[in-house]
Structures are given as structure tokens and as C-alpha cells.
Length: 151
Image (cartoon, rainbow, N blue to C red):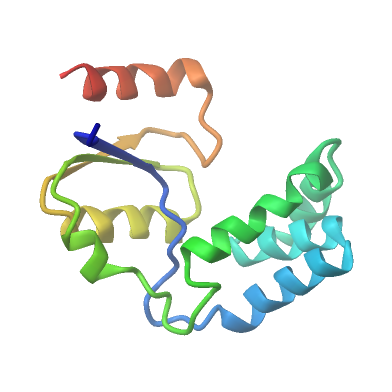
């Protein structure tokens, strides 16, 4: 059954004029070496998190367990290919209704990416969640998703 709607929450594309290949390669290498906490730290620093917060977050219980999923983020981003690589040509082919969500307190590159992607997707609208960062409490996210998906 074909899908009729798409929801993107803070797509992970950085600015198109930034080369993230080197740092992305370092994160993947740290994962291959089994240095999960260090991989999470570097990833968070790449995302714009202050160093102290990145170190603290990477040390939280369970973070090392989810570290291998960082490889999926880099796969979506063409492994941190030079130039940010927002897949404009691919996005233009998505004709389904789309909701792109971004928190206004998220790192600026995430909010900027959401705006860029809304401009490219043929049938998209942006939902900005006031004062929210990348981790939105379910009770605040659910109404936005429910409204879009139930129409």
C-alpha cells in the first residue's frame, strides 16, 4: 500500500556550504573501534552542542547503547558528503503531503534545514514547536502529529 503522508522531524542536513565529511568519517571510525561514548561526543559537538553538555550527555546511561544508530544518520546524509548534500532532486520527487517539524530552541542548523526542505518539497508545510529543542516531550509532539495525520 503506498503511503500518502510524510513527517520529517528536524532532518539532519547541515548547511549546504559546510563540509562535514571529515568529522563524519571520524564518528564512523570511532564506532568501528568500539569507542561509542567518544563517537556520541563527537556527533553532539558536530550538531552544535557545547562541549561540556556533549561530554555530559554522551556519558548518560544508555547513550553508548544507541551510539551505533549514528551510522544511520550519516547514511541518510550520504556519510557526511562535502557540501551538506541536502538531496534536493530526491526531495522534489516526494509528492505526498509532508509535515516538517522543528523546535524553535533546537540548534539553528536543524531549524534552517527544516526551512530549506519545506521550500523544496512540493506539498510541505512547516510546524515550529515553540521553545522546544530536538527532544520533544511526546505530549507536546502528539497533537501536531495527530492533527496532520488525521486529515
